[in-house]
Length: 171
Image (tube, rainbow, N blue to C red; front, side, top):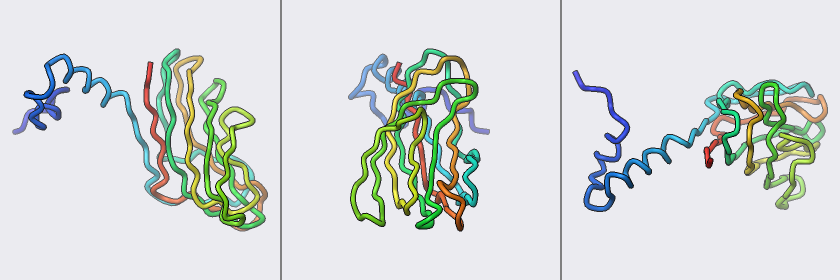
């Protein structure tokens, strides 16, 4: 029976001994443990303007820790229903995020800074892909979730499998 992997087994398997000292390998291990990435495993559909939690994309956050948020959301909304998404944290202020995405109707790059905490996008048109970046310091321990809905209830809007967010603890 194989023994469970220890914190440095992965790095040791790369045979980095001639390149990194023991302390450097420990520091690399800390960096690996600070990044948590989540990927949406199946499509999520929205037919109303009420936000619903996206099941595969949730993160535990710690009070006072500093987090960087990165990701890409793959969406398709109707021309009238549109799409909206936000990050929320249980019982706390929401993260500030900046987004860049391609709006398919205008065929242009759209850059927008969230005007209210946590809102990633809120568009009445069709959005194809949205790059998400942001920063967050939690007020208390909690759970950060991605939520998705339509801007106006019309047809069906979809957040596609393969959409992903990464939370990196930077302090």
